[in-house]
Each structure stands twice: as structure tokens, then as C-alpha cells.
Image 1 (cartoon, rainbow, N blue to C red):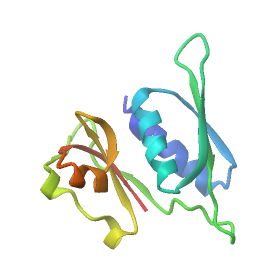
Image 2: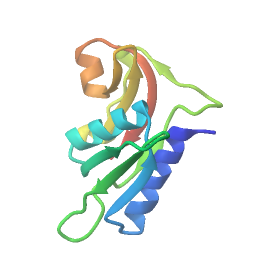
Image 3: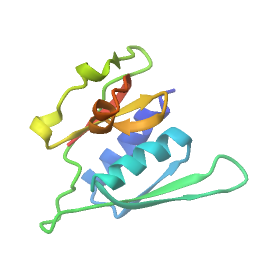
Image 4: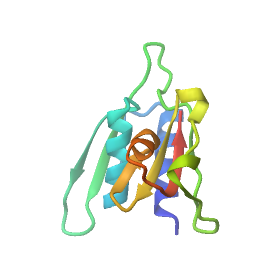
Length: 129
């Protein structure tokens, strides 16, 4: 089961349905992805509520003044059936700099720009624009 793919699909579907928020089971990687989305202005906020089990992460989506979702597309790159690993020199520029790539590195989940600056390679999780 692809839990990261499920996270991305829930965010994509909630945006298409114009929901204010979406609840997702929490994990450290998902929280890392949400932090990057928040830092780059793709979501309004998120919070993690701990329960007796895994915990739940509530992501508040962001919309433009015209009511369109800020996240136009969010695509999974590395999947369980086909992992995609990149060196820092091979990290692509998404939509000529209007999008971001999210990577899982040995220093945690980072965006493509940070990975290039710090010369970090890793598994490319997804691209967002």
C-alpha cells in the first residue's frame, strides 16, 4: 500500500471538491511533505492530533481569490513499483521554477531547491505546481 500516494490523492481530491480541510493518517514523512507545502505557500496550515494509535493530520487547503485551488497538480514520481533516485545535479526544475519537487534524503524530507543548495541526493517523492 502506497501511503504517500494516498496522502497526495486525498489532497488532490479535496482541492478538486473545494473542501476547506482534509484529514489524513499521520506519519513522519507525511508531516515532512506538509511542512514543505506550507513553507512554499501551497496550503494554509496543518496540525497533527495524536490519538492512541497513529494520529491524524488535518491539512487546511489554500485557494486563490477566484476560488481555484493553489495546488494545480500534485504528481507522485517515485512509486513502490518504480523508485526514482536522483543526484543533486539531476534534480529537475518543475514548470520553469513555478513548481517544486519534494525529495526524501538522508537529512529528512526537503524540497528540490534546498537539496540542490546542500548538494543532497535522494528519492524524488513528488512534484507540485
